[in-house]
Image (cartoon, rainbow, N blue to C red; front, side):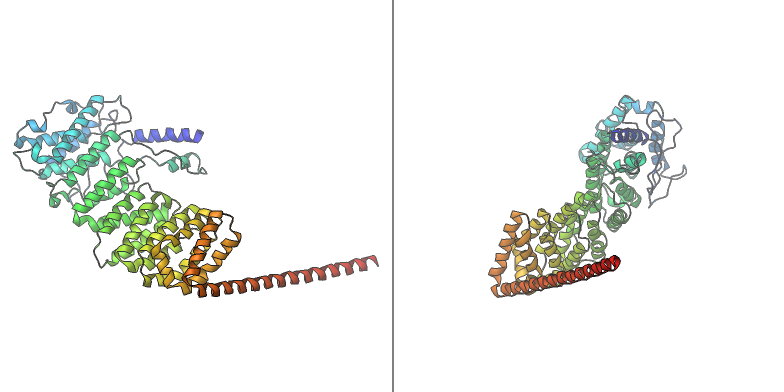
Length: 522
């Protein structure tokens, strides 16, 4: 309990510090003024874009449009920001020619950063920012209605200021995760799986910022040729960094936004896939901790569904090197549903990948984690449903050796889930076509269950499968039974020989000991 109280205290302190100018490791540099109580001399916001010059100089033609946004953020770092209290008209109340200038002024307000964990600091400025965000969301969502006599799309310099204001708000240092806080206090402490996720106190404002970004991306008036200069590779990478947020509400918005960016900006698609790959590689082989794996897999599930045939070699490598190894981490249960969907999508797209997938599952099959085994068996059934006979034959021997081990598991849920495979008509059909190979592998496991398994439900299911084999091919069943009995007889004979040899050794040792005793007496 003491550790939990300490962790909560550390987390709150970290969140309060998140408004200070800082950048996450590995993310492009971006700084913003701290909360309203910060120093008045904070540096202006600078947003780096990979496809553009890093900063606009006063002599550059775009600098008049970039400078107002940076200036507003700089002013917002002070104890009080008079420009935020400046009354501004509504966008619908001004002439079309004046709207770009008014948009820039409202985006200055949006770019200002406050400490939203303290509701008593700068309430008027925060409310002004919220109202500006609400109006901008409505404007971007329905530009034709908001600007009936003006061009439908936003001017280029307004788009740049819009993305800069969004970046100033959402790209921030994330608080340390629960396991990091616990490790800082007690390096030997185990992570608490029952700990509630951290909910960002700034979310009411962040939600509006994410909504503004989403409406900007999906708007039919957003020209990708222009927008790709601002929603660029650096922007996408920083979005992916935010997927590690502990707040599930933020991850849900990020999932929607990134999916929309992937759908609209075709030029970014290969880069997004590669960047997601890199997130997976780091998770699998380095940290094994990440909050957003499930959301990234949901995006990939939709992407995989749209892959064209024949499938590119790049996509097959992604399956073999990223998706299949995702079965390895201990936390696979958190995202297994999404992972299983992606795997099955690959097999349904290209049935020849079934052998690769099944052998990959066998490679990462859990040894001591029974709940993980149950998940693997469920995924295996879905993969086998999409498997054709030729691919099944390539992997059936190692596959049914593993299924036989699962049948004999002392954990009844594992044995029960393995026996449920025979309820699937397609799997039974594949087994029937290859019964000459599969029956001898599986028969011994069935007989062991009948003779010695402790669970009555497993007994009943095993008897049903055994009867199914008998009805399918009685001659093969009798042959397997005879082989099993002979094997048992040989094992019994070897056991008796072993026991006889031990008895002889014991007799020799006893006789020698008795002889030594007689010598000592004499």
